[in-house]
Length: 73
Image 1 (cartoon, one colour):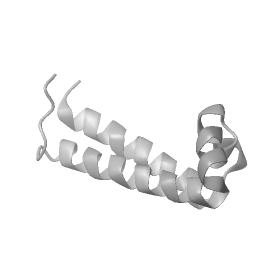
Image 2 (cartoon, helix red, strand yellow):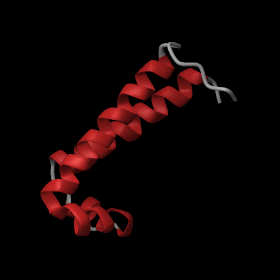
Image 3 (tube, one colour):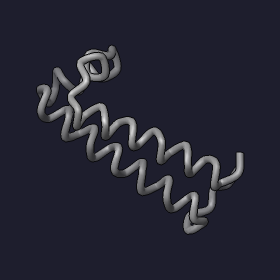
Image 4 (tube, helix red, strand yellow):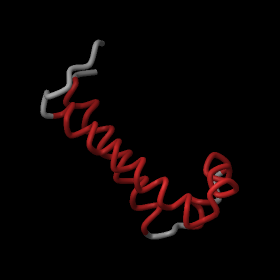
C-alpha cells in the first residue's frame, strides 16, 4: 500500500475515533474494545483518551500522506 493511501487511512481512522468521542456515541463507547477504557478511565476519561488517540493517528496519517514519514513496506 503506498504511503499516501496508508496515510489517508490513518487520517480516516483518527477522525472516526475523534468523532466517536466528541459526539459521545453510545455504540462506540459500548463496543467491547472500548469498554476496557471506560472501565479504567470512566466515560469522560475514555472520551479524552479517544480524542488524544484520534489526534495522534490523524497527525501520523497526515505526515505519512505528505511523505514526511516514510513507511518501510
